[in-house]
Image (cartoon, rainbow, N blue to C red; front, side):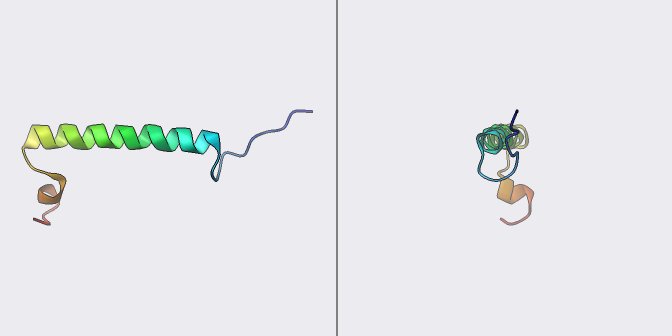
Amino acid sequence: MQTQESKFGFTQFAETWNGRLAMLGFVIGLATELLTGQGILSQLGLM
């Protein structure tokens, strides 16, 4: 019998994808800041 690992909660699968998406978001934010010359707070109008 084969058991299926849950894909929700604090599982290895979820944590791996969370880390990958966090790295992707950081790189996109950094690239946007370099291209526009403004930080994220300035782009959102908070500074």
